[in-house]
Picture 1 (cartoon, helix red, strand yellow):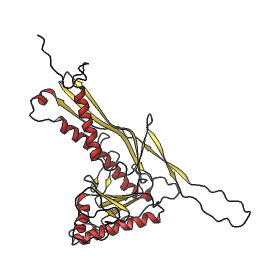
Picture 2: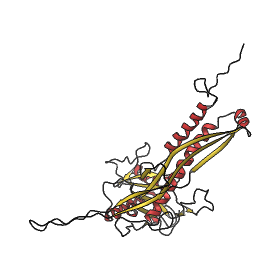
Picture 3: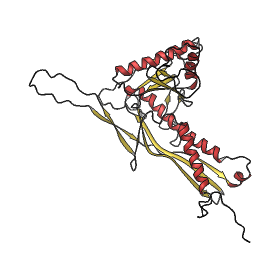
Length: 343
């Protein structure tokens, strides 16, 4: 009598790949973890390409306006200012792990599911962090390579950084949660004014990103009834709990665990994640922006590979993405920072 084993990873009992379904499950967990963790998706300009290493992002200036002075006069031809911003792909962003057969078999708990979550989250966090770093550099009028971003209007428009030590509670800063919440709220409202003065379209969605402890100051003030600036009646909640974000004015607020608020030096080698995206953000508290501030060029979303190394009796699991980021419109980004203190 023959002995038959039901291979749980085999597809429809056919084929030589006995763990095909295991690989699919692992890959799906990576994708889920990435989608669950990423914050910046949908909040900035993303363009997907295939078969090319760079792409242009259009930059269009404002329309010209004039009077029709008299009956029978011929209209003057209007013209738009045009420019383009070229964004180049970085090398693939990769996370990988080798899983030894023996250790996997004798281990008393599952590691692949945890690895899948950790790998997906690592890619999402790094991608978001790179976009945030580039957003702050955009507000400063400096692109990722240190150059000055191009402008559709010929003259670069930037929003002067808003500084206030009261954005932080402690020595030299705010003396109470209420005082800090007021400073944060007023800075965000001032940021909206700066964007408006630089002709950022009112229709563009405004968002602000900050560290969790900064947003918690507003949550606490709202709970105590000390933050009347939070938009609770028109789209915001102003209360702790739930998933609906807070709003101040027309700006939706997000807290980000990986908000860049330290001095991030350039990596020493091209293999490290701060090779292209770095800077001193030790005083930065908030970055306020619209989707046109930063562009991301994507060659591929999350991809997954598994390579069987029979000689070493292990599986190499790789998750990767290929993208690049760059500044678009400097007037669409507003940095809010401490004055003399550091984070």
